[in-house]
Length: 251
Ligand code: PGA
Image 1: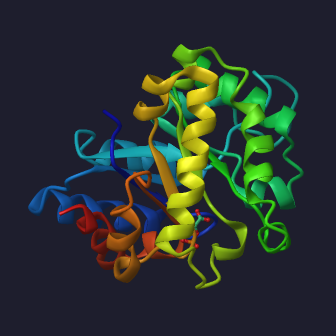
Image 2 (image 1 turned 90 degrees about the horizontal axis):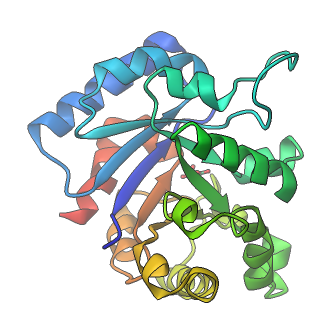
């Protein structure tokens, strides 16, 4: 059966020393009180090599927030999936709405990134979600279906390695959260698309996380929905008390 997962997305926050301190604090908190779900922290590239060895890999997985769409070579400033994997990192967020909107990441670019991540044994946390105008026009289902094209070219075996995160862009960092019912409706729709494409077993085994202003006070209600298998957490992942409060929603 699919896993429940709480993943943190640090975004462009915390310098190296602060990031190491945050990872250590989380590691200690979860050693003292074991989580009832998988826990992942996704950090800036420069933190990966330092953070990966200091967390207990049986309890906390580490992920990057992005990787290049090219294998290697003259791409100044880029970081390849192979480089990410060489730090011991196991996950990578791909397709985050901030990458799509600020850095022009298209369905085609993301398809390349997903393939390279998988080729390097990284588990993609693949993000999809609509913007406010699309939600207001009731186009959210169409939007997520189109975004899934980046991962629907994969074989069933490769698709099974992917974690999905539904993140309505209007709820990211805004304090607005999708209601548990809104989240459940679209998660169930996403799962139905997976079932159509890859069959019921693959669909039932795919973890679909919710992201967007998830916090300790709303996590339990969201995660209680049958098709919501955890969360991708931005702001609340930067404080151990908040992040742990969300992890504890599975207790
Ligand atoms: P937020 O971000 O929890 O700060 O809304 C979620 C995300 O962007 O992954």
